[in-house]
Length: 193
Image 1: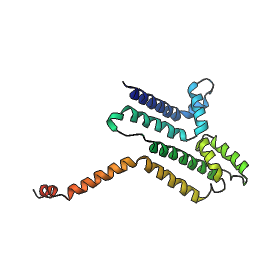
Image 2: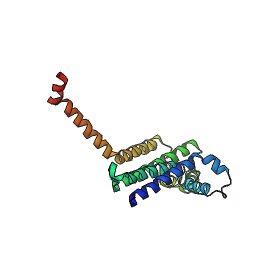
Image 3: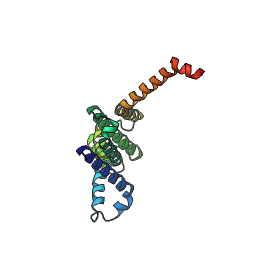
Image 4: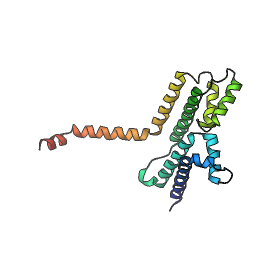
């Protein structure tokens, strides 16, 4: 096994363990957290990332699969894709923080108190995490607005498309060739026979 396959297997295993821990989160966190190393790890990760821990787990699994089968699938991990993935992570974290703000009590009118409330939401484990809360701070006055939600969803869509643009281009090329084949004389001859 080469180094890339070993690294892929490690990323896959780490993501799978995190998914299993998240799936069993309620019983693990109700146990005494000091006795179980896995509950300590899960508690620490969810403290900072909240619901975005699921995103991290799935991305770790996908990254492990890409590394393990790199020669067969040929997906290149470029800086653009990494930037799109980070943008997707941060914008979705802001969407989750915004949904927690809309459901909860209104934010204060001054920046300091609103920032404290956003940090509270970020550390609550049930929102977009601390990164989403920190990014939401400059927008504390417009975080409630439907326009802010629309902008965040548009950002999520743009980053998602940017992330899978190679697959979209491949699908377009395949579709174009299929159309070209059905318009060709070869197809018309086969259809007549």
